[in-house]
Each structure stands twice: as C-alpha cells, then as structure tokens.
Length: 150
Ligand SMILES: CC(C)(COP(=O)(O)OP(=O)(O)OC[C@H]1O[C@@H](n2cnc3c(N)ncnc32)[C@H](O)[C@@H]1OP(=O)(O)O)[C@@H](O)C(=O)NCCC(=O)NCCS
Image 1 (tube, rainbow, N blue to C red):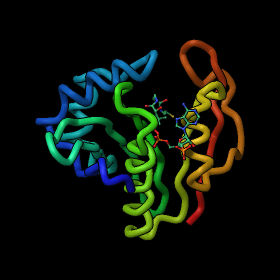
Image 2 (image 1 turned 60 degrees about the vertical axis):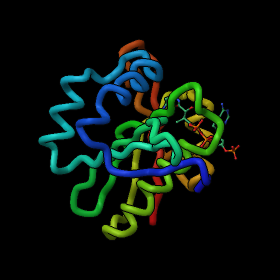
Image 3 (image 1 turned 45 degrees about the horizontal axis):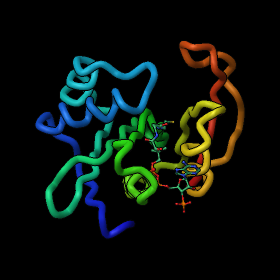
C-alpha cells in the first residue's frame, strides 16, 4: 500500500466528498440519497474511504457486499486529481484483505469493456474475466464479469 493512503470505514460525515468523487467518476452516478440509505441500513454492504495522511482529505471510496462467503465489488472510485498514485490499488487491496479475514472464497465484479484503467487494476490483483453481461449499462455498453478466488 502506498505511504500516501489511509483506508478506513466510511461514515456519514464523508458523504459529501464521496458524492463529489462519484459524480466525477461515473456517467450514471449513485445518488446521495441511495448512498446515505445504504451506508446506514445495508448490513451486507461495506463502505470505505481513502484519505491523505496529513490533511485527511478524502481521495477515493470503495463499496462491496458480502453474503455468506461471497463478495461483490459494487463500486470503486478515485478523485480524478489523485489517480495513478496507487490509491485505487490500496482501496482494492483493503477489500481483498477484509474478504480474506471473513473467510470469503470469491470476489466478483462487473466492469465496462472499455474501462482500460479499471480492467488493468483488477487484472493486476488476480481478477480474471469469466463472462460478459450484454448491454449491462444504461448506455448499452457490455460489462465483463470478473472473478477472484481466494
Ligand atoms: C479505476 C480507478 C479506480 C483506478 O484508480 P487509481 O488510483 O488511478 O489506480 P492506481 O493508481 O492504484 O493504479 C493501480 C493499477 O491500475 C492500473 N491503472 C490505473 N489507471 C490506469 C490507466 N489510466 N491506464 C491503464 N492502467 C491503469 C494499472 O495497472 C495500475 O498499476 P501500475 O500503476 O502499477 O501500472 C480510477 O481510474 C477511477 O476512479 N476511475 C473512474 C471510476 C471507475 O471506473 N471505477 C471502476 C468501476 S468498475
């Protein structure tokens, strides 16, 4: 993990800066209301944020679900001003470590076929493409289904 990254559980106090990152990162972003509700009420969802060690500025976020022994990466995003510095990798590594600690056996996710950065990030962390979901996204783009086994 990069020395420039702290990863910790997300709280409601982090919601506004995280929503800014969500809006800067996705064409169909999660709404603030949905995120607030899920953060407070979804026992199966785990939210984390990355922060700069010195100023505590939030630089990224990640969300995964965990049921029995299966995890699913629901979202991961890094502030565009802080990309390519190892923060996305740190957020993903924190998820992998948590899933391992819970004795999870598989982590799955969907990613746009065109998302070169995310595909490279996941492949570098031992996720393999195991299938395709045609027209998975609202704009009609296909998703790859990726799997990492413990
Ligand atoms: C995908 C994303 C989270 C990566 O975050 P990041 O902090 O920039 O990633 P890192 O700096 O930790 O990079 C880790 C690895 O990812 C890959 N990667 C990251 N950005 C890349 C890019 N622009 N092109 C190619 N590979 C890239 C590389 O393998 C990199 O390892 P390396 O630095 O040793 O080459 C970020 O680009 C982002 O927020 N994108 C928009 C939201 C998104 O698409 N989320 C994924 C939804 S499935």
